[in-house]
Image (tube, rainbow, N blue to C red; front, side):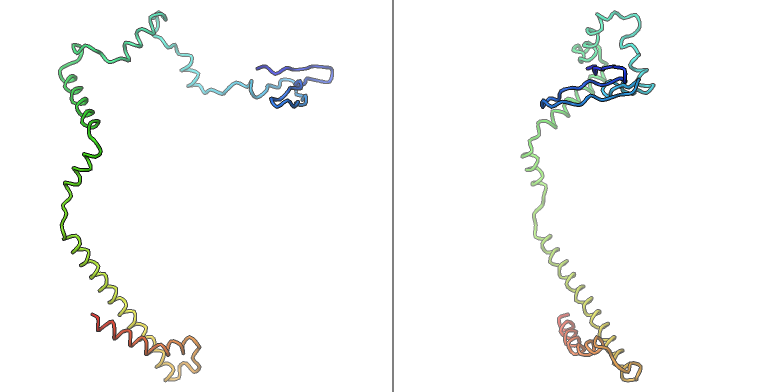
Length: 193
């Protein structure tokens, strides 16, 4: 669509146009040599230009014969005489694979997989053993942690007794107060092992 221009003594203008909703656009003054956006040619690099300029048919071929030859090339040859023995064999194998893949029913595949699965009680037993091992590992970890806390409490008590710490802070006093609870918890865990 060419943009209508109006030229008068003051310059070149794009004429006022009506929008689809019925309102009007103002006329706009443009400089000499202005090309509207919709009329600017699309940039094509040299390779695109080369392939567009390249003829689609081989030199010397009649354009009326071109569509007939393209359809012959695109269709598969119906007669097997053009194919070699190995090509025929390969085509048969490919067709057979396609049929095997296409004919398999998802339900049948699921049934075959279920038949392969061996149901026994050993996985449950293994899970129980693993959970027992995990519990034992957790208990040993907890025991180790409690012993560490008790050691810290004892160290703190020694520092207070020796006079290194003259006035213990609130947190330090709370730590000393938890000593009995830590010892009881440690005894309970050691009895469970």
